Image 1 (spheres, rainbow, N blue to C red):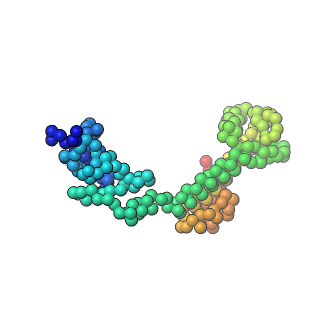
Image 2: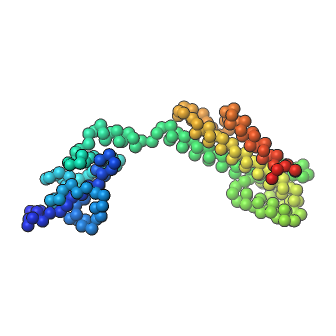
Image 3: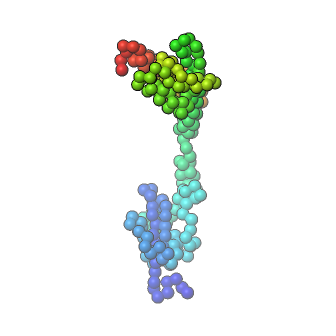
Amino acid sequence: MEENMYDFYNKHYIVTDAQGRITDGWSDGPFPDRDADGAVCMNEQGGYQFRLFPGGEENPALSTGEGVPLYCWDGETVVPRTAEEIQADLAAMLPDPLEAAKEAKLAELSAACNAAVVAGCDVVLADGAAGHISLTPEDQINLTAALAGVEGGAEAYPYHLDGELCASYPAADIQAMAQAATAHKLYHTTYYNHLAVWVRRCESVEQVQPVVYGAELPGDLAEHMAGVLATAEGAERPGGAG
């Protein structure tokens, strides 16, 4: 049976982007209820299945496997895009090497910062004994609870140093642990923040690679970080601001 027997036709529609590239196409035969608002009716006397060209392939592929349009609409007809145009679009889809390097470096530095925080810090107790506390998220919650307990009036609170059994520590020791933990976390998060600024200001992949956790900051960033930490330290001293 001929598709247009009895002079019955289907309309064929295409959708284009701002550059005239065809991004979609269909026939109202299989899709009679599809919204054609904003689409171009390229053929009002088409067959049941969508075609770009008379007698051409039914429902042809409109883009490469990467999603680059294969055809464009010049306002009157469908025009195959040149290999050069398609290659240019493919190249534009590739990530910028510098931005990709920065993104990877920031993820690397963030992971290193988190590991440094979790590893914890040394603490000196009221009697002069030294120990180490880990600062996993759970440890930080537990230490916050212990600090709240002694600040609420408890003379002692259960806690533990790494490798030691849980014990009841006097308020002064709990406060010393909390202060050491706060300073430790502040140092590493502030250091990471300044490393991130260093990475974002890099102008080449070669400049990004040497930025590693533990590296000495550039002069201006080192000075700024020192000022931030000094301000925080002053605020924590008796009589300090805050």
